[in-house]
Image 1 (cartoon, rainbow, N blue to C red):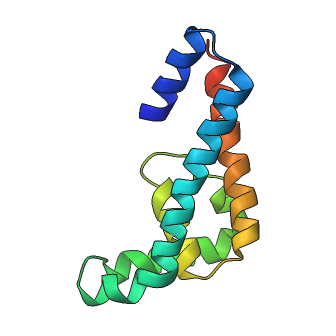
Image 2: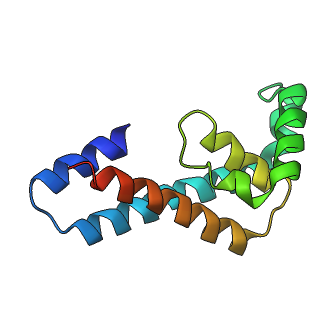
Amino acid sequence: MGSEALLLYDLSLGYNPFLLILFATIGNTLGSIVNYFLGYKGVDFLTDKKYLNPKQLKSATTTFEKYGAFSLLLSWMPIIGDPITFVAGVLKYNLKKFVVVVFIAKGARYIVVSLLI
């Protein structure tokens, strides 16, 4: 809730809502791109070192393969959002599509949060 709280605080100070939402969305999307590349390049290392449970990875992979881009719309959610973007990288999901869908999901979250004020 850190970025949402900061967004609400900055909105309460009267800063430009469009710019706040835009930069919060860009920043959060960049974080998801980092997760994507960790999955894309690091899955073998992480499983070899036992940092990643192969059973959990298989479960996440099955779910992502079933729902694809629709599951990326949940990338804004706490707890499950980061693993979804990681699995997208593991599966080498199209990066352009990934960025568009994640940007939309993250942006929608910040728009909704900004309407709370």
